[in-house]
Length: 127
Image (cartoon, rainbow, N blue to C red; front, side, top):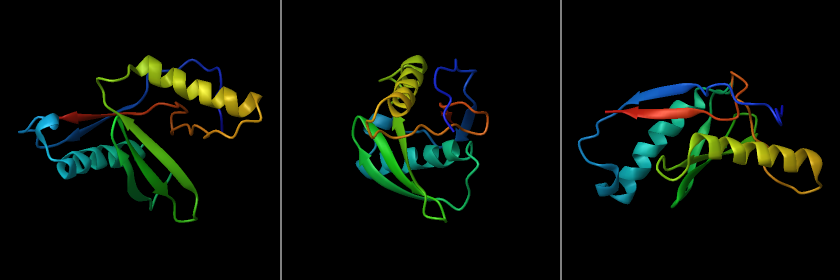
């Protein structure tokens, strides 16, 4: 389901209690990925999917995970660094993808709305 052109309502915010004794930037690569994987699982709770397998694809500017549902459907979950993109810019990117998919012959990913029909889900870490 696409909601192209729809103005966002406030995206659902999901909080994750985590041990934040070390700043993210001082963590090893593996520790950074573990922390972001925890956020990914929290974010995925906003979607009407269960039994998901989550596998790291890349951890650079953005962290991306391949998400596979039990029936074989596959998704890509992108988690940008909070300091790198505003919520407005992230939502704009998703609307742009939806419009490209709907209005052009280009093969682009389809943004998937969460349970609240928002294209953007926010998962916060709470230290």
